[in-house]
Length: 89
Image (cartoon, rainbow, N blue to C red; front, side, top):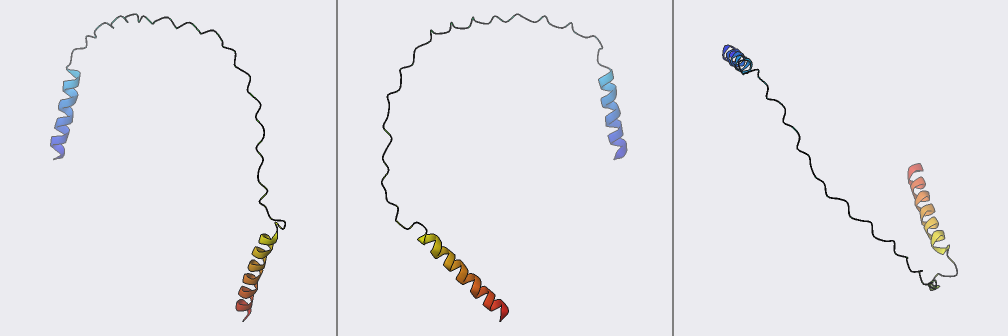
């Protein structure tokens, strides 16, 4: 099996060396004609933006905004105390 592979490699090498060594002269590059860039349009003056009144937001917030945070803190404290009590028991 190895002899067959070596023979094939040698045959490919000999075939590669047996090709003619004459190189074709490089082809002359053909010039590419590019179209002229379009003329830049004249600048147009932008109209001034009309002033817009700021929207009035509804006042839907409660008078005691920290009640929710106090409730969440109480739940967290209760959970921590329960875990501490089970850990110590």
